[in-house]
Length: 349
Image (tube, rainbow, N blue to C red):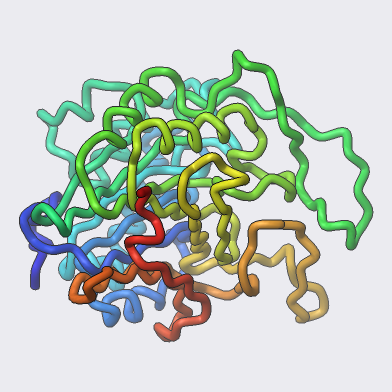
C-alpha cells in the first residue's frame, strides 16, 4: 500500500496514480458500492458532498448521521484501505440548497472536520469554510488535490420564472444572476484558490460539490453565477495553472463534460466528471420503471449514467506523455464512462 490509511493524511512523497471519488450517500441505507471502490485499489478517496443527508440545524442529530455513515461496514473497509478526504454539499452542510445564510454553518463545519479526522490544532479549525488543498508526489509527478467549499460563502439563489414544458430540456428551478456583488466562493476563498493554483504541480484535481461546466439545466451549478464561473476560468488562465481537471457530484447521475479553450479562456480543454450517487440513484428521471432524461448540456460528452456509481482518476506516469483517465464506474466496478487525455493536452505551451 502506497498510502497509509492509519493517518488522516496521505504519504505526500508517494506517487499518486489512483484517486477514487464519489458523492451523495444516504447514511441510513445499504451501501454495497464500497466493495467495488475498495477493489479498484484507490490510494485516496475524495468525498465531494452530500456525504450524509443531515438537513438539520440540530448539531447532535447531524453528528448521529455522520456516525451512521462511519458505522457502514463497507465504509469502514474503505477507511482501512486508504485515506479519505473531502468537502461538503448542501445536505451535509445542513440545509437543502443552502449557502451563506445558514445560521449553524460554524458548528456544522466543526462536525465535518471531526468526521474527516482533521486534528484539533489544524489551521482548518480556525478559518471559516472547509476548503482544503494538498500536493502529493515528487517533482515531475505531483498531483494537487483542491477541495473547494461551495456552501459557506455562496450568495442566495434566485428562483426561476421560466415556464418550460416537458421535453424542452430545462428541468431546474433556478436562474442565473449577473449581479457583480454576488459570490460563489467568497473573497477569502478566492484569494486562497489563487495561491493554490500557483503551487507547482503537474496534475490538479479541482473538486466542486456542484457542477462547474453546465449552464442550462437550472439546478445548482456554477452556471447560476456566470461571473463567478468566468472568474474561475480566468483565474486558471492567469495563474498559468497546468493540468487542471474538474470533478463534481450532487446530481444523482453521472456524466462527463468538456469545454474547449475558446469557450472558457483556459488555454487548454477543461474536462469535468460528475459522479453521483453512491447509493441513491436519481428517481426523478424514472417513469413506470423506464429511465429517461431530456436535460440540456452542450458540454456533455457521451451518455448520462443514472445508476449507482463512483468516480476513479487514473494517472499513467509510465508513459512518456502521462495519460489521465477520468472514469465513472458502476456498482460492480465496471467502467461505464471514460475521458482520456494526455498531460501535454492539458498543459499550456
